[in-house]
Length: 336
Image 1 (tube, rainbow, N blue to C red):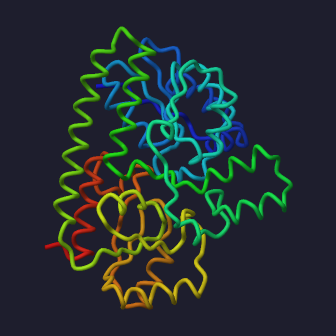
Image 2 (image 1 turned 45 degrees about the horizontal axis):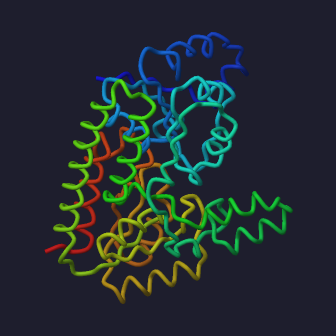
């Protein structure tokens, strides 16, 4: 069983400093060390990257995650301590464009092996960004507005345009398996002594992901409707893979508020397409989803974007939560 050590969050460190609890951060330095262990030390940006590192690395890795369980990863801010520890690691595994603070820290870090999951598969623009209302992952139009308002540099603007690509690629088991293959290759190259085990573990993981893909294909092949409503436009890849249509209340930003016109549009669409359920997620308030559901006479249920595992998660790892998502979709779509 591999060691799982988590960094103390920036909030906790700040709170400790404010209260004069110097011992909190001092003690945590040993227990949360991201580097200098006798294993292959990997810093993972958030849960889907952590899961890959643990599954592929097995007993040979010490995985530290930058995003605490229950933290909303899009809005992560790193402490100076976390940034420093990243530099002590053997590898960092992240998904560029999902967490700007991580992108910046990785860019400044001299960690030897930097693995960007976004380069290991193809990211796509699913068009859901048109419903975004002011988040970093907004539409190109929004990015252009921000550019003119804040006089961003050309480089910053080009990075914002990249945010029009949907980062939630791990919710497609096929694309997630492509990323797993790339991570395994990077681990093999960086730690050749254990390459055979990394390859074996990666093969086992891709087999599990292939089985998961088959379960989704079979479970969603014949349904009453192909349309589902969700609070957060995280499921574009999943919808595309299995022939479904995702209608998001809030676009790619889970925290934004939809306009009254958008709510009316969704109410009309629910009637037209036989939609029964509005999905919300575990890490974000369900208030908007429940309001829409009440107004439109719909049910609510959880569809988990798997950005973190908490005690509220319907499963204790990626595979289990995805299986729970499949059951929820089968029920909502009227699977035969």
